[in-house]
Amino acid sequence: MKTERLLPLLVGILLLAQAVLALLSWFLSATSMEGSVRTLISAEGVRWFCATLTHVVGSPLLGCLVLLAMAWGTVSRSRLVAPQTHTARRRLALRMAVVVLLVCLALIAMLAFVPHAMLLSATGHLWPSPFSCALVPLFCLCAIAVAAVYGRASRAFLSFADVVRSWAAGVVSASPLLVLYVFAVVFYASLRFVFQ
Image 1 (cartoon, one colour):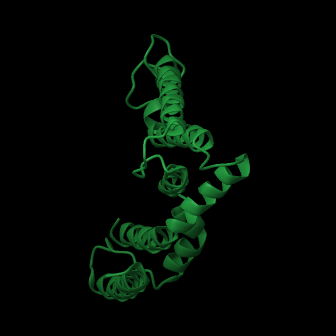
Image 2 (cartoon, one colour; image 1 turned 180 degrees about the horizontal axis):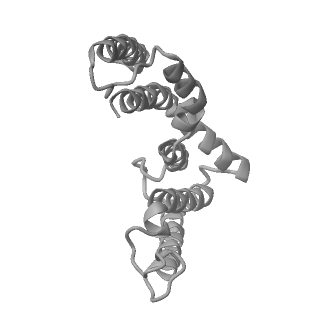
């Protein structure tokens, strides 16, 4: 099934589930003796929804999705993963990309894996630590750097503007996922509000 058909179907299901949850929460709160269920159709529920909507949608997961989309846009537009003939320019571009990857890995190792590294926790552990919180951003930045260097060396990118356009193209290609994310995360937060 194509994205053009699947996205409206999934969003419609999530909107219907949100409406059912609102009615179900109202019914359960009316019949519950303990008051363990909160309703979305109340002053408290409406205040909660309006006050937390942007906070719920703007979670760290959204940041990770946007960074992953930008990285994918750079990798795909650079033609790093596309099958191509092995020309001298492509071999040089691959060598340059490998060097950039090794530099990225060395920087990450110095920031996280040596004693008293900057990205370790205050107790010196990797989990939880700034390093563990930054795994996705670090991966995305490395992928962007490697793909940008490869794309520039192989002439897939003719300028820095082409690299920036690849970031935007990645976000555009991930836009159906971002729309779906908004409705899914709002439904999940509503479930937590009702049954918490």
